Image (cartoon, rainbow, N blue to C red; front, side):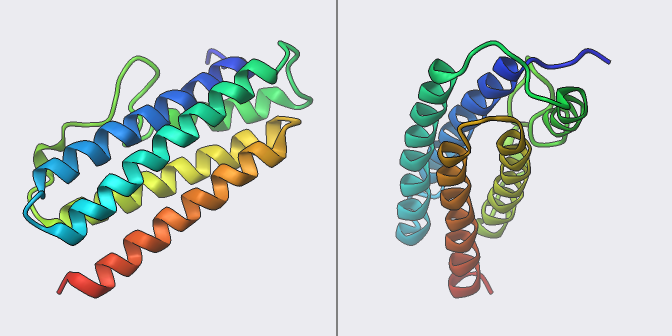
Length: 156
């Protein structure tokens, strides 16, 4: 199994945030008649762009030296990247054709956020700049809480 470099892992984090932005923008448009859901997903899409910028800054701060025990971390990161939500290095999110209802959108978004959070926890373990990743992790947690609150408030 090919190993990811630390730079590739951060690049994937950048792509993940871009995918999140595209997903949330698409879903906000798809459900534009539901004001609450539209506002929630527009807010989440803007947050993804902020995170993308933070990961770009992190990448620019990093050297090329691999962290200790990188082989294990790299395998974990590859498993997440190849999961249902990431589908490998050269691919993007799966087709959103299956997202037909508000409940589908929120459930998929929560799953994507959980997978993203797992990825970022793995990344955090590997980098020296833990404070940058911690800030993003805390925001990703808040995304899950917003989605859960929305689900509990509006979905029967």
